[in-house]
Image 1: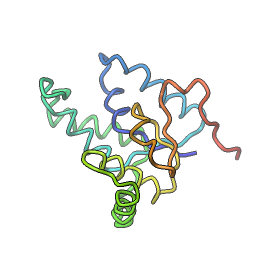
Image 2: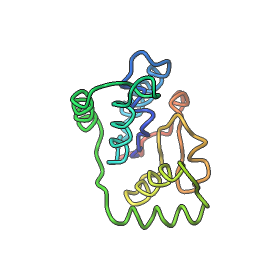
Image 3: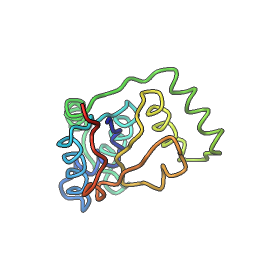
Length: 154
């Protein structure tokens, strides 16, 4: 089964000094070893670049654009990059109206829209509550990988 990998997982797995680093790496490693396809969308990489290059004193990781470019290229080798499409906007608009989404939560709604358009039902994230409102998707926390969903039999 394909999983969208949330930006917070990407960021934590790129920072070995972060306390959630091991959980992020273990979550993706476990899913991959079980045969799940791990995906990202352009929004993940845009959000990643934002935090990765933001100064550390502004809640970022303080890396240079060159370092960010190298890390984004590494992520594109590790995860299937699904394309942006016009259909994602239409689905996003439906979701924000249906669920009454406000403020910063519009970004999560766009991830859910991309998941809907690309036929994904599961997202690996540290922020399960951010996705709880959406009946369309299942949020899985990396620490729940002790008994994650199994890949479909082939």
